[in-house]
Length: 347
Image 1 (cartoon, rainbow, N blue to C red):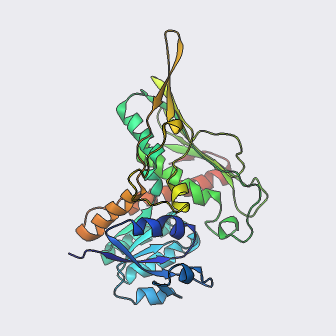
Image 2 (cartoon, rainbow, N blue to C red):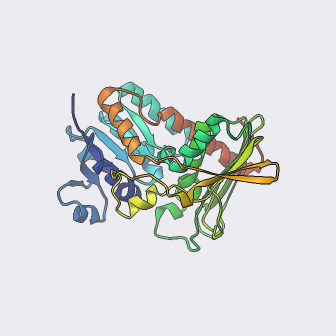
Image 3 (cartoon, rainbow, N blue to C red):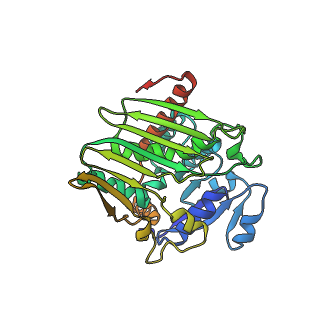
């Protein structure tokens, strides 16, 4: 059995620098051998020992490359993932999986045709706060869940004209950047909703949408997913309300911040949150409101690569099924339709 998975990364932006390269470096199963970068030269300066490819054909024609990470701008995901699959490579696509559901369906068909693994980097399933919320719901402590709110607040007054995510190209903007995370978490927790309503806006006068709010409707549960670039006030990342109590969690998972700062994801204390960042469970009883701190579960971004390594080497299911990422794209498409018509979309 092959002991290492020779890996190529398409693109040398934030996802490569702050996620995949440090996580691959901390992995026993993966070996980074090639980075595809266009006109800039910083990948070659940062990694002189690696092969820096100037075009995708160099990677597709290299029989030593087993696995390709598609981390290029969103509108390129479908075309590049298709070419990699047809060249016999296993493929992971950064979120969003594609731009449309049809593109997602086609990639899934191609992966099945060529018998290659296809997965999507929905990394926030391994967030400490999400794992905590999932465990809290499963425990029954909160009772019958009635309201679920998930926020992704940021504050950046000016939009960056030179950054593709802030332009008008397909798949740009905060909606396509952040909603895949929040939608994926909701679908993992609650499944497909019965209907939804979405409001997507431009608050800073730029070319791309920079704020959204999506409501997913289930039988007795309403899920609210929200993100924006003009949130300077403290906003909880999670609010859960059930008939046995409520849970409020400020402070988002810190793994991304630590990876960006160059911290080692293989460190023994990786993913552990200090008590000062714990969420609070609220109940009402004799004497009024009662509060209980809920310990935050350990975050584990390296776990994605451990599971993916097993999938590629042993044939187990990948950590994120392509069909699950396809469902995220379906909700995204229906959200866009709802926003255009300013009406609820029945699913």
